[in-house]
Length: 171
Image (cartoon, rainbow, N blue to C red; front, side, top):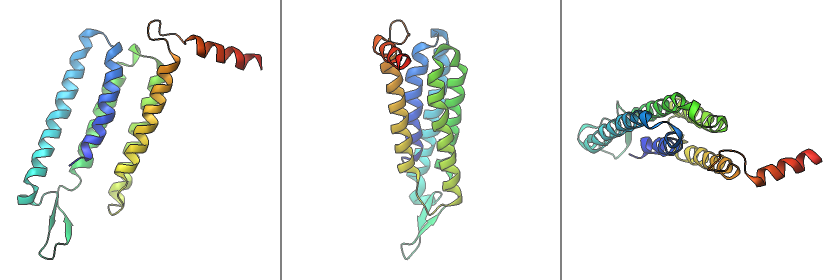
């Protein structure tokens, strides 16, 4: 149930930054993207709730042995679609925020897609939770590091960053 919602963590985090700096008239894009993501997630929740009757995602046989259903890859597909939509949405607004943030958000979608591909080829190995947590933590730390060194009002490096740069140059 939670697989597609892990990707949404990144998406909401990215959007909170991206649309903070985008012009107000572009915020409709955010609304459209979030509506799309919520609708596809709601459809997935319905599939999960109906799974005990349909066996579409998985089912247990008479001996309680687990079997994958025909829609077992649906959560992975939904996550990929959400990640691609969020990345495209962020790239459309890329001229309104600093280029360091583009570097930060460029590798988590790629890492997530690699994890998804590995998960498809090795379905018995569950990588998703651990991998997504590692990507989320790395993403959060990179993002916070960039926010610490930039003055929120002027959008220029702050005094601490300036002093560190001067020290580096004086070595």
